[in-house]
Structure formats: structure tokens, C-alpha cells
Amino acid sequence: MSRRGLAAVASVLDQAASSATNILVLVLAARLSSAPAFADFSMVYVTFTVLLGLNMAYTGQSLVLEKGDGLGARCRSAVGFTGAASAVAGLLLAVAGLLLPGATGRAFLALGLVLPLVLLQDGLRYCFSALRAPGRALAADALRLVCVVGALAAQPEGVAAARLVVVWGISALPALLCGLVLLRPAVRGARADLRPYLRRGHLGQRFVVEFAVGNGSSQLAVLGLGVFATPLAVGALRGATTLFGPLNVLFNSANAFGPPVLGRLGGKRATVRATALLGLCLAAVGAAWATALYLLPDRLGRGLLGDTWAAASALLPATGAQYAVMGLGTCALLTLRVLDPKATLSVQIVFSLLSVVFLLAGYVLWGALGAAWGLAAGSALKAVAAWWRVARLGAPAPRPAAGATAPALPGA
Image (cartoon, rainbow, N blue to C red; front, side, top):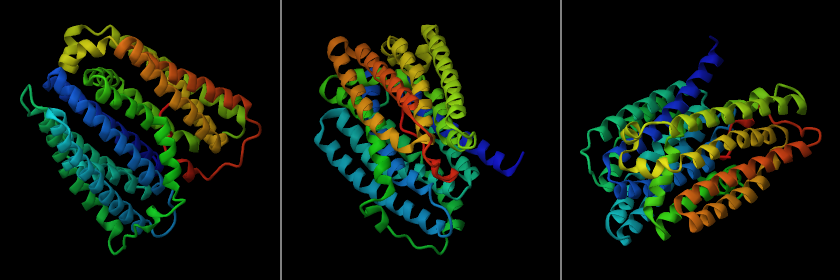
């Protein structure tokens, strides 16, 4: 296999390791916790997911577009900015945790204390991507997976959410140290400069907007259910979506490796044909996975999610429908990214916000099940709108270089 092929395999495996970590963290937390404790943990984890996505959009996606000399200095700057920003965010979360009552407040306080560790560890992945060294990212993320599974599996049943958060966060330390050691040769002698990240017009600002309307809005809406409605709804929604984690690996891989491949097909017709076929395949996989989960015996389901299985299993048809149409929507947005990169933002803004409205309206009318079907309806409308936008495209706009299409799209 060529060096480029090995790098692609390492990138896919690294994405799989990162996704597996997120899935297993939630599965283990659900098995070890009572339903109320897992609801608290889920609220904290949703908050972390939003902050992780913001860091990825603002720092990571702009970093992987960097080319030429001076990559070492830019990687050191990215690490420095992530460390400083995560420390500020962690302090704010710790203060919020002190103000919130009971177990929920203690869980957010714990997140504030460990946030710099987990964000820095994840941020190193983008440094290795920019340096074209995915094997090093895979080594660090594989160590992260082993450490977090071992640390959480050693906890007793009925453990408090705050303790789970602390154990989860501290278990990132070995992988963080490993990543820093692997990064050191590339940044030795380079000087960090945080000023570009604070300037108006920084490329990450556009990516933050796309993430905020594409992923962050729905995540914050789910979090809002726990604040203004019931944390148990968050636990049920989070438990259901956790079971579809393997599909996120496929979506992210398509986003990461699709643009360079599609850019070489030549012409709108060939590109649309390829992405439409891929979208149908992803939708079929999503429907098949949802069917398999729906037919899963309760005994096995409780083995995966513990007490949360009863509430999460009722949402599987709705969440399965959402992921099936997300496959179609992801490929439509991928098509737009290749043929007309400026066309994605308006679709994301309108239909991601509409998904939030559907989620909240669904919860008001039918509880957690209505919220899940609201998300599915929003994803379906976004997919329809994106493909309609593809159909209206004329001749393709001048394509950026292959290296400029690396950032993953916001969720469909």
C-alpha cells in the first residue's frame, strides 16, 4: 500500500477510535449510573460536545488548511490558544457548577476542572492532521480509548455523575502527554503567536457559524430540555443517539475524504451521481442499523444502556429515521461543498434553526418522543432543501485546491 493509502487508513482508524471513545463513555456511564445520574452526566456531556465542536471549528478546521513552511509554529500556536481558551471556559463552568444545586451542579463543576485536559488532548489531532502525520494521532487516540474504558469500567455501580466526569477527564492525561511527546519534534524551536486567533476575519469564525447552526443549535436545544423541562429527556435522547454512533464514523469519513475524490470526477453530473449513490447507501445503512437496534432484546439493550434503555428504546424509530435522512443530507451538503462552497451556509442556518423549533415543539406536544421526531423532521427538510439547492446549481464554481476541502461539514 502506498504512503498516501496508509495515511488514509490511519485517518479512518483515528476517526473510528475517537468515535468509539465517545460511544463507550456513554454506554459505560449508562450502565454504571441510575437513570437520574445518567441524565446529569448526559447534560454535562452535551455541554462538552458543544465546546469540543466550537474548538474544532475555530481552531482545528482552520489549522488543517494551513500549508507550506511554518507549520510547527502554527501548531504550537493552536495548542496554546486551545489551552488558554479551555482554561477560561473551564473556569466559567466551575463557577456555574457552584451556583447550580445538587448533583447537577457538582457534575458541571467537575467538567470545569477537567475541561482543559480533554480539549487539549482532542486538539492535538488537528495538529497531526496539518502535519500529515495521522499515525501519531491514532497512537494518542488509541491510548485515550484504552485509558478511559479501563478507568470507567473500574468504577462501582451507582456512581455519582460528578465522579464519572472526573474519572473520564483525568483518564485523558496519558493520551495528552503521549500526544505532546509525539508533537514535540515538529514544534521544537517554534514560537507560539495567539494574535491571529483574536483578529477579525480569522477563518475559524466562519466555521464556528456553520457549526453553531448545524450542530450546536440542536445540541443546545437538547441541553435546554434538561434545564427547563426534565433531565430525563436528555438522558433518553442521548442514550438513543449513542447507539447510532457507528454511523457518525461513516458520515465523518465521507466528509473528510469525499471532497478530494469528488473534485477529480470532473463536472456536476458525475459529482451529483456519485454523491446521490453514496447518500442512498448511507440512508440504507442507517435504516438497517435502526431496524437491528429496534429488534434487539431488552436484556441486551439493558446490558448496553442500563436503566436508560427503557426510555431510549422508545425513541429508536424516530432516531433511526433521523439518521437515515442524515445520510442523504450529509451527501447533499458534501455536493454543495464541492460545487459551490458558499451555498451551504444559508441551508445550514435556516433548516438547523427549524430543526430546533421542531424539537422544542415536539417535546411540548409529545414529550421526549415528540422531540426525537422533531429532530427527524428537521433533518429530512434540510436534506430536501440541500438537494433542491444542488439541482438549481449551474456550472460549478472554480474548485479550491484539494487541501482546502478538508474541514468536515456540520451535521446534517
